[in-house]
Each structure stands twice: as structure tokens, then as C-alpha cells.
Length: 83
Image 1 (spheres, rainbow, N blue to C red):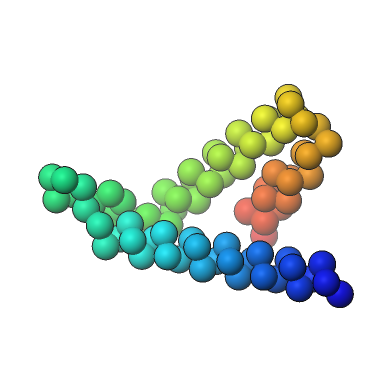
Image 2 (image 1 turned 135 degrees about the vertical axis):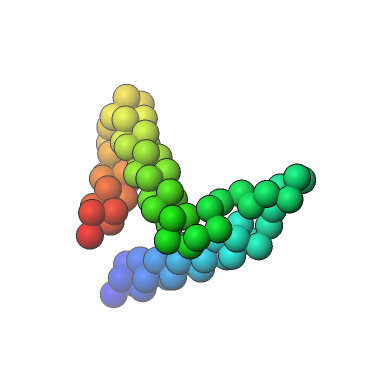
């Protein structure tokens, strides 16, 4: 069905965008020559997981406060983080 195709395309886009973002962050440094993320990829992944977790719960609270009918969106993200 079409919705499954769209979900798979969205998943692939998300993965591609995330990978491109991380490649750029690991390649770049700030103006003083410092890396913007930990140089150890495993530590950087842990840090990003923390940021992503904080952001998805922020989004949940926002939707609960402003658009409760959209709460399913951050709940889907929370489910994804826990699998």
C-alpha cells in the first residue's frame, strides 16, 4: 500500500539526512579549531541520543499544550526511541 511506501521513503530520508548531518559535524571544527562534537563517535552518538530524547519530550509537551490532536506525532517518535 501507498502509506507503507511513504513511511519507508520518510525513514530512508531521515536516515540519509541524519548521516549527512553527522558526517559534516565530524568533519567540521569551530573558528578556534575545536571539534563541535566529541571526537569519539560512540560518545557523540550517546550525546545526540540525549538531545533527541529531550527534544521529543519537549515536542510532546508542546502538542499536549497547543494541539492535543497532534500528540500522536511525538508519541511515534518516543516509540521509535524506545525500540
